[in-house]
Length: 340
Ligand code: TYM
Image (cartoon, rainbow, N blue to C red; front, side, top):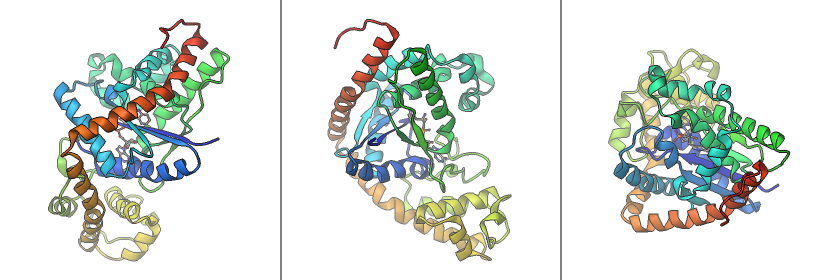
């Protein structure tokens, strides 16, 4: 069966290194291979997910555009992949409702991301934040995705998507939904904060020093890496020596992912050296990798009309692909839908 690759990103603020190494770089790497084999890629800005917490409307609209520009700058090619914003394809919201009636409250109660995001304020969280993984299931099931490139933090949501698909197919004696496989990169599954090796690099961290943004200039990158938390020990001789050293492990993991080497090879090369020697090498590699991306991003942002045109074109293609599946779901449930 030809591959159907589907993935999304929330249009909140900047693209950071965790997004890039954990997910976007894999989107880009898959798009050529998939097109060659007669498959298709669908990548979207998850604006319906973004509104599960308050977002200022004008800011949301601007973020959708700038995240689209960032994805294209990072290598997503709208000629090869279908790129769109989720809200422009109403089938996502429609299927999410139908799947809300298949998903069980007990399944959602186990979702660790909801627990982290709602924290002590569970009662005050939006219903949308709780049902968020059901919308995510709709996002991939609606295109009959076979492969979903994501970072490790999305694994549990994709397992839920598989459970929902299985229950729906069984309850309604259909083969409508395909079970998606998560594709999680081995080296960069979870990039951690530069200030705390126990927290993942995230857009919601209040400290900008905790993350590398794809728009950071060379001086900012060098300063963030110089100030990144480490320990006084030298780099060990083998990868196992990093096990109890989360900050050291993170920086070496970032280097390995950027240079497409194994952690073992990087450690072997820098063994015995301190982080004072390693950090400039890492900063240089980051600057080299990110400079062309931020250059392209600045160019793309000059032409918002072209970005809107790209997104509208992608949405039309996505609508056509999603329509038969959502119609099939209504029909499997015995519902009569508005004919389109
Ligand atoms: P989001 O917007 O938080 O992140 C986008 C992608 O980046 C990955 N990622 C990371 N990977 C490694 N290390 C990190 N520190 C790191 N931070 C983020 C995420 O795993 C993700 O792949 N719910 C999703 C968006 C979404 C989606 C979907 C994804 C909506 N529908 C359907 C896949 C399929 C989210 O909030 O990702």
